[in-house]
Amino acid sequence: MNGLYLHIPYCRKRCTYCDFHFSTTFESYRVQLQNALIQELEIRSHSHQIPLQTIYFGGGTPSILHRAELEQLFATIRKHYVVFDDCEITFEVNPEDINEQHLKLWKDVGINRLSIGLQTFSNENLSWMNRAHNVQQGLTGVALAQQMGFDNISIDLIYGLPDQSLADWSAALDQVFKLNIQHLSAYCLTIEPKTALQHLVRKKALQPANEQLQSDQFLTLLEYAKQAGFVHYEISNFAKPGFHSKHNSAYWRFEPYIGIGPSAHSFNGQARRWNVANNSAYIKGVGQNEDWYQTEILTANERRNEQILLGLRTIWGLDLSKFEANWTQKESAQIEEFARLNWLLINEKSMVLTEEGKLHADGIAAALFRVD
Ligand code: SF4
Image (cartoon, rainbow, N blue to C red; front, top):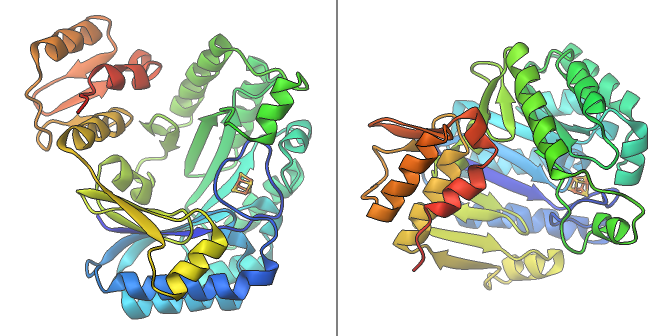
């Protein structure tokens, strides 16, 4: 599997909970940033000759891109990279950008999978989240995308919201699975440092959900997804059979990918590389072909720990045919204990979390980490 990720660091508004890299004041340097993305695509193609099976536009807000910008990015990719005919091409979309003209453009350039950020079915929640859309725009947008022929649609939802009861969450799940979508990503709200949300919680304007309620909401999510015929293939991701995200699955399987754009990460199997998370430093760095990224070669233990952490999050589990287990006595005892608690299923080929185990995924992985 070989994937290409493009980070589009533009947003209209600053969502209160978000700590991704983006800017809301980008118009003055938009042309320069576009040129830098094109240049990085060209430069990186020299060291990347393997055909692309997935392309993923994330952000930020890719759906802010104009026709000319998007066409130029695709022309550059197709000129400098070999792209498989059945390449999965995902585009993250904010509901306020969905209209006939844009949908036609996205189809024209070859996008075949939309990831739409609905986040919640409550206008009140959308308001404190500072999202740029309302519930109706989201619903109309999904329906229009389907009418225009998009048949691989993922929706993002967030649970564990302040004042969100179990009944509210169940109602949201009811609604989302009626949308005839193929994929759902559902994330538990986390309060990231230095976000507006952290500020709101500190001054007690919002009361975060307690852990027990979040766990109950997660278990409710599993139940609804199962009833709707969705496979729970990664802790936060659910898909109709055959519709799992190929791009993201490659991350979780520890496969190589390249990331283009400010703050984008790349991985070649041995080393991680990350671009500077600053738009002007990125433009300057790429333009002058000076270092606009940092690289870190993973130690054997770091590779091992990441494989455990990522593998255990998926339905495929930790692939023991590709993983040198040689567990220590202490680790073996720990694994036996997790199996006894019915958190882990182990056979010769893999080690997989049970539904109960999914509630403890990070703790189980951490217990098996090795430190250099
Ligand atoms: S639109 Fe997405 S990337 Fe932009 S601020 Fe909101 S959550 Fe973050």
